[in-house]
Image 1 (tube, rainbow, N blue to C red):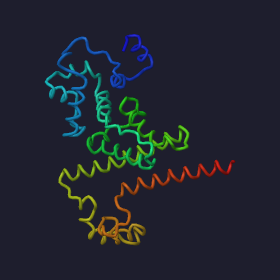
Image 2 (tube, one colour):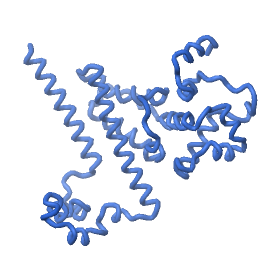
Image 3 (cartoon, helix red, strand yellow):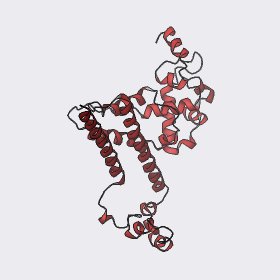
Image 4 (tube, helix red, strand yellow):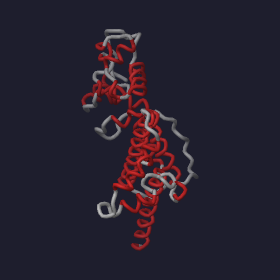
Length: 265
C-alpha cells in the first residue's frame, strides 16, 4: 500500500492491531527484520495459548520462545492487546464453504453455528478475550459475511439480518464457552458424571425439598436435572435443541412478516 494511502487510514484513527491485520502497518526499520515476522509471533502466541491457556501468555514468553528480546516483538506488534486481536484474527481464518443456493436457510444457519462453535473448541482461549467492538479485521469480517449469506434469500432488511447474525453468533459463543469449560474440567480430571451432577443425584434428592424448590423438585426427581434417565430424553442434544428453537423463532418471524405484507395488500 502506498505511503499516502496509509496516512489516509491513519487519519481515520484505525487502531494499530486492526491496521496490522489489513497489512497497513510499516515494517520496523531496525531490529531482527529478516529473522522475525508478525506471522511467527502470532502463531507462537497461539501455540502457547492453546497448550497453556491465555493466562500463561505474555509478550515476554512469546519472545523467549522465539529466542528474541521482548523489545524485538514490540517493533512488530505494539501491545499485547494488539497481539490478542491478531490471534483472534488468525484462528478466524477457517475454511469458507462454497455457496450452495439450493441449501435451505435453516441448514445454512446450522452450518454457520457449528463452524463458529468449532473455533472455541479448537482454541479454548478464544472465549476468554473480551468483546470490545464489532468485527473489524479481514477474517472476522469474513465470518460475518458467511453469517449474512444464510439470510441472502430471506425477505429481511439489513437491520433484521444483522440482528439475526448477532443472535446466531451469540448462541455459538455461549455454546462454545460452555463446551470449552466442560472439556477443560474433564482434562483436569473431572468425570462426565460429576459434571452432569449424576454423581450427586442421591444427595440432591435428599437436600432439595418440594417446599423450598417447588419447580426444581419434580425435575430433579424425574432424573432430567442430572441426566439420570437418558433413555427417557425426548429432545436429544441440549445445544442442538436450543439452536432448533432459535431457528423456529426466526421462521415464525418470517411467516408473521409475510402475513402482515399480505394483509396490507
